[in-house]
Length: 366
Image (cartoon, rainbow, N blue to C red; front, side, top):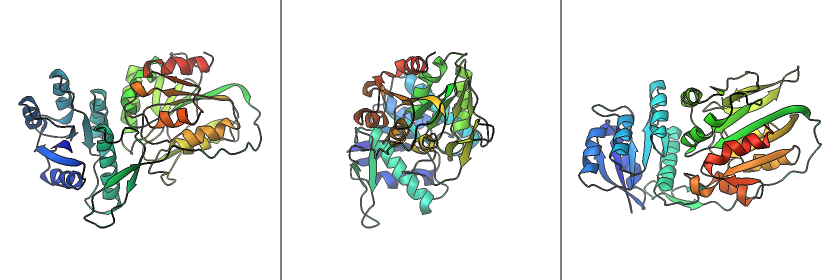
């Protein structure tokens, strides 16, 4: 039984989260706190938990300051941020992830309806990953047979991409290359060890599909831009793809590339439905590259649950010059997405996180 500490200044939110946790047979709420100061006091006086669920906006000590204090006190209990969608919370959530939070979950608008059901599933999935209840990180949620039934999780089978036969080989435009990076749980922090190491004069565009809801990817892009020599920005609908820029796919949208009449490519940030619960979905972005004319496409797959990106990369490999670099198990927060491409045989190289950028740059011929 994994012990959970729920930290939130809202009594209602503490109750809602506690009810979700306590309905799972493998989890129990062993404590609550209405701010970071009260939580830290429990931890410093010997209370032991397997995971902390941390709100951002709290009186006395907010979630970001709590993360700093945990680091200062060398308390290594995994922390999962449970954050609102407010723009200021987006910035602070990214900061909390930098300070070591394993991931975040967006708070639901209400405690009923589809939005709440999605929140419940995502919260439990990420708690399972953080506490080691699912080492693979490739979940499928089993629906309860009755309202009071406990939630259970099962591992999905090893992904077996359905490879399509090439319809035709495209005439590549010499010198046009594209780098695409897919990431999920643990990705925001992992990207700090990847993006800042692209050289300032990197001559090709880079697109990052990081699983995130709306309201957070702009904060992530701004933070990475501050840390990097190369320009980093959130992709905008209709924006033309330019060399030497890192684009973060917009959270809460599906991101695709479409070709303009003049032959250039621009982003379509659209409201196509989620796939596998994901929007943005890396597979959908890769599928949009099938009819493109890039000389080569260099793919990176970082830490994350599930297998997003595996089918998409398999598909474009049939029609393009594609190379794939996967993060290794030892440096992943969750070895799900990289495992999928490695086990499917489409990863050309499996390397530690600190070597990902160098490998991508070399494969781009820079």
